[in-house]
Amino acid sequence: WQALELTHVVHDPGDPLSVVFAFSALVPFCVLVGLATLFVAKREMVWGWALAGMVGNEAVNYVLKKTVQEPRPEESHRGGYGWPSSHAQFQAFFAAFVGLIVLHRWGMTRLSAGKLSILWAVAFTVSIGRVALHYHTQSQVMAGMAIGTTLGVLWFLLYKHVAVPFIFPLVEEHPIAKSLLLRDSSDIYTRGVDLGQREYELSRTLRGKKR
View (spheres, rainbow, N blue to C red):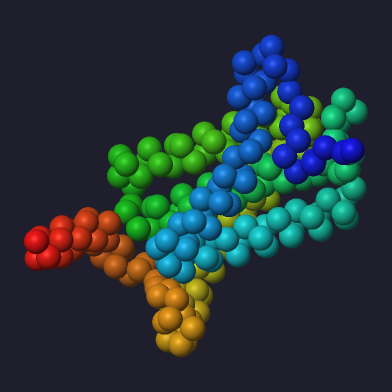
């Protein structure tokens, strides 16, 4: 028998902080499930773009680990290579990309600042936990954060300057995309329209007519 290393996290149950770090190691899986659910529920192509970027981000991490082949700390409970940290890189990519989406759609408001703070607080918690639980060295985590942030910014720039003006319009007109109700609401958000509020008002209006 062998533990599934993907989710197998060794920690000190007597240390509350160690328990927090252990649970934080599961955050990337929650993010993936949450984004996939959001994409299926809303059919917004930006979240499909985000998922594709995360897959690419993980592919870059895999190639770098196989190329550099820097081992994990000696006290690590897991084998394999450690540079760069995939957890740190994943969370930094997510925080950078989604953070820029927030700023692009709503600007720097108090609510936006709160969202950015949460995104980066989670990213740093996950990253610090990888060092505290001896899965990575500080340099491995710092490298993961730097690479993930850089790729997240680049992926956002591709989204803004390539996907939105060129790729998404072509996809939206495809028969399969129409049957799946895929859409791109980027321009609507940047014009200050709150789609969530509009959907809520439409739902109440249609429900009132039915009654």
